[in-house]
Length: 158
Image 1 (cartoon, rainbow, N blue to C red):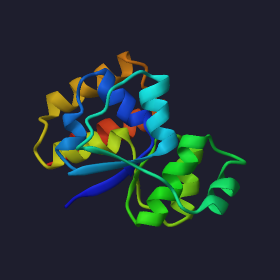
Image 2: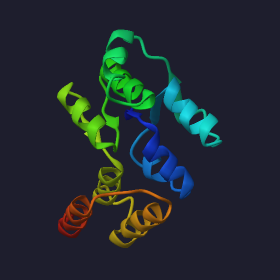
Image 3: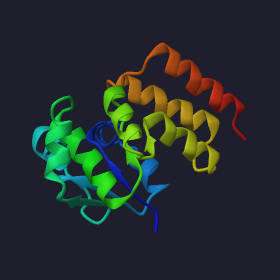
Image 4: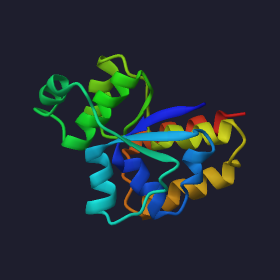
């Protein structure tokens, strides 16, 4: 079974562009902590499919408190949950990615998900580009350097 933990940004982006298949192509279940669930369901008024997105409470409150000095609540809980469950983490915010990596958590972002979908032949190159631009139109932000790297990796992919 392929499992992963996720912060809210990528899930919200994929739901907004109606491409949750990007996650379903790769994972059987996506674990989200309570604060991420609230960001998606309460703040964004988005309904999540209960059998795919699994809401889970964190245990390590001390690590959460430590992380909360520099990250928002959802990111903190997502990092704690990924560490507790020993799973990879979908996170796009630069600071959160760095902290998660420093804690030994394998990380992936929105662009990594797109590239992995392409590599596994779930998306053609054109579909990958189309999803990318749909996300940008729906307010996904990415640095110019990262965008260039994404297109270079996509160009050189199988």
